[in-house]
Image (cartoon, rainbow, N blue to C red):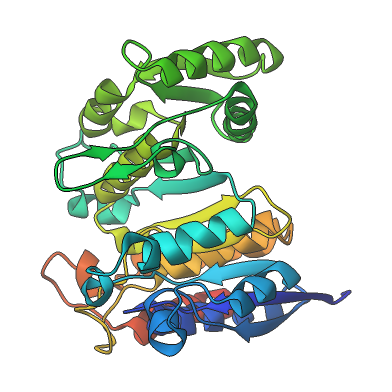
Length: 356
């Protein structure tokens, strides 16, 4: 077996980030050992940890390390400790959003799956035997989060939501391609009955449909999409949408799986991609050894697939996670009041199934 060498920038982040990162690297090493992959990890600071150490949420040395790496594996950032800082200095905007921009990332992929063995954790009542497996493709580089001008004073707040056709085509192509690989159904979510940027979005996406004959395209207003995610999440295969709507809808769909601790994500677009859990840093759980590492572990699996083209190794991790869950291993967030295991014990169960 030919050995493949890759360098990974590891940014543990804040709160539970370092704990779940440690376990995800153990799982990643176990998968790599069976796949002819040799991984070298370089660790750096971001977010609140970087603020405390350097006064900046994203030190330039962290950016340069990421740019020189083959992929970036990131832990969650932020926490109440830094919430009163100027917005540009806060871990989320000054760290995470800034890093995405420096790396040229424009497509955020957030898969959400409700495992049948965890059906009881879903906060809404589904039909017997029902489940879902959907992917949200969120545009990352434009929209209200990056709009100009911005105005904020004691009496006014203003943000602008702007899109151009090139940006819409770029993200829509990611959505169409993802749907073609999956179930062949793409839902484009907008607010074209009100917003000019959404009118452009719908026109551009519709014009692209002719080039994707194997994909069925539907358009849906964002308010209806939010409702349908609750009433019938199985309706969706792939959702493609703009930045703000994607942020909200992907969190909503993630909650349906019972815990944000189950949900990974990938941010693609530049030469170096970034992988991170969908949930927050949960500072109230930090240091207790009880956090769910699965989101971080599945983010590492997405790295194997999208950055290293090692699909079999990625699927092996995903299968090991499911087998551990079927065997009854649960961290507290998905235990529904029953027996639970800690962060390390969950990783141990996954590694045991990887090595079996």
